[in-house]
Structure formats: structure tokens, C-alpha cells
Image (cartoon, rainbow, N blue to C red; front, side):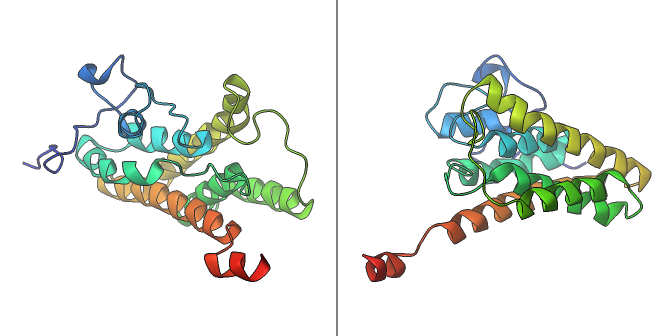
Length: 201
């Protein structure tokens, strides 16, 4: 029998939101604890679009696979908070590409990619309230809703592709890892290196 216990020193992650740490924790609630914030599944240290992916993956994977997610918690602290990077399009593109990889005939994901391409082609625009992932309810409407919607289509695609539990777990954990990597790479690219700062100063 496969154990659902996490590696020593890490918490047992559970699906859903929890009242407090004693009642259990999901991945993002664990992030809030590590970051020194109040106990919540919406810590300010992580962009809400990234948090939404983490919620979806946390709740959709098996109990055994869920315990692997705790090792991603530290990486999520502070991620997506660069003012130079638009996080939501990166997250949505990663979800769309994951969906097409398992269900090439899906119609939703190509439409989503085309919308993202048109948005990118339009160039930078002035950010309104909540666009940077801050702003409470407005940020939730702008970022969490679209990501949850795309993830719902991804889970449908997984059923269409007839993925078994193990394959679905691998796909979802890879989605979280790919999303983290894509946002991290974008932030690094947007931040001038120490050498560049010296050269231009």
C-alpha cells in the first residue's frame, strides 16, 4: 500500500480550504504559514493567478500525489510579484498548452491561445485596478476567475483523453511546475542583471 505521508518535516496537505492550521492545510495555506502571513489560501506573497493554479492542482490530484506539492511551497513565496511581468497571460498560456498536449482536438485551448496572442500583439497597456494581482475582490475577478475556468476545461480534457489517476497526477503536477518555471523565467528576464545595472548607471 502506498503511503500518503509526506517527507519528514513537511505537513500533510489536504484538499479544500481550512479554518486554521489545526484543521489542515492546502498548498497555498502552507505557503501563507511559511511566508509569515495570516493563515489563508490567498496569501499576498503569491500572485492570485498562480495561487489559483495551486488550488486547482492541490484539490484535483490524489492524496498521495498531493504530498509532493509541499516541496513547491517555498518557490511560490514572492512569485509573480514583479511589476514588470503580466502573470495572468503566462499562466493561461501554460494551461492551454497543457490542455492541447493531452487533447489536441480541443477547441477551447486554441481560442484561448489566439486571445492571448492578440492581447500580446496589442502591446503594453495601462494597468487598471487589480491588474497587478493586488486589490482584493477586483484582483480575484481579474485573475482567479479566468484561471479557474481554464483549469476546469483542462480537467475535462483529461477525462476526454481517458487519463488514469497516475497520469492525471503527473499532468497536473507538471502544470504547476511549468507555470512556476514560466513566471520565474519571465521575472528573471524582466530584471536587469547586476552587470547590466553597473553598465547603465
